[in-house]
Image 1 (cartoon, rainbow, N blue to C red):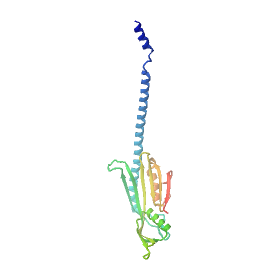
Image 2: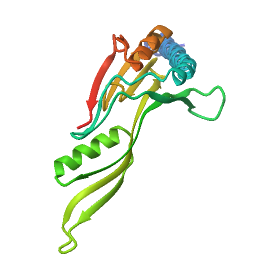
Image 3: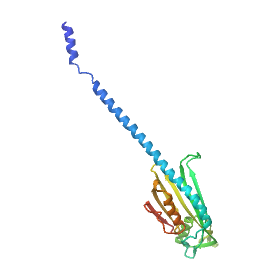
Image 4: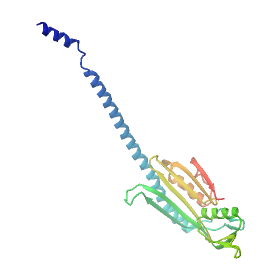
Amino acid sequence: MLALSRDTSENRSRPPLKTERIVGFLDDLRRQAEAQTAEREQAATSGQRNAMLADAACKTTFQYWMQLATQLNVLQPVAKTCYVIDSRHKVEGLPLSGFRVDARHQSEATAAPYDHVVLKCAVRSGQHLTITKNFLTDIERLEGRLRQACIQPEVEAVRNPDNGKLQEMRYDFDADISISVLLTPDHSNASVRFEVKNIDGLETVSFDLRAIEVSTARLDELAKWLVGQPHEFLKGAQNLRRTEAP
């Protein structure tokens, strides 16, 4: 009896099992796991929504530009700007022509997200020019302007036949100016980036818009810009940047 009483007292002196603490900790882990799962599901839902908005902007733009290209190929509006190739050669007072639209998807699947949509046209001067430059600054300036105009000249380095030293650089090309508007979607952020080349001269204008802002009304403003009318296409643009040719 004494031994039994000793064992009983010893058992009573032992600390109780921490069942409640274990259950409480597991509950905390469960709640954390559920919260993270809910956050992931919400992020996935938000990501899908953003992707849908960006793709809808691309679809709206593609459909609008297809109709616009058809009309402008008939009207052939005259470019309202002067394109300066160098101090002696300019392209101005000529119509815009060859409007075309291209849309690419991220894969060949029909329902794949858009990669980009682009509208292109050109100012065709009908002039074949040969220009020579013999100073480095003039060479760099001309080459920069030709790149901006998407002109690929035939280039020849003319050297002195006696000593082989460079005398001048000769450029042969057709003086046709390419114009383009590129729309690139950002599916993760529900936004789009526009890159506009050579509407107001040899320059690139780039900016961002929320995808939801790409509407027919906004694209109407771009159409006005193309035909030389006052426009508000850049209104509310984010990260606006103009890069002029040298």
